[in-house]
Image (cartoon, rainbow, N blue to C red):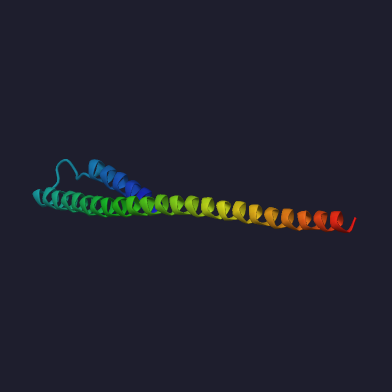
Length: 111
């Protein structure tokens, strides 16, 4: 995300340079040719930055999809753990109930 923001800033800066770059009003014809070359170079730089930005956006979308998938798996795992805990508690309660039932029966028989 930081790299995408940096690219956006650099594109805006380069576009500003394209719009404000100029030569003297009565300069030589070669000055205008150099200016055109300079502007074309900056436009090509912007194009390269936009390609890199698109690539980063694609990578970001993949990462977001992976994060969402991992969150789903985490929720499923947490649910499974909770179910296991509930089953273990039920099992322990049943064992405890059987033990107390046996104790009561032995007290009743010995009583």
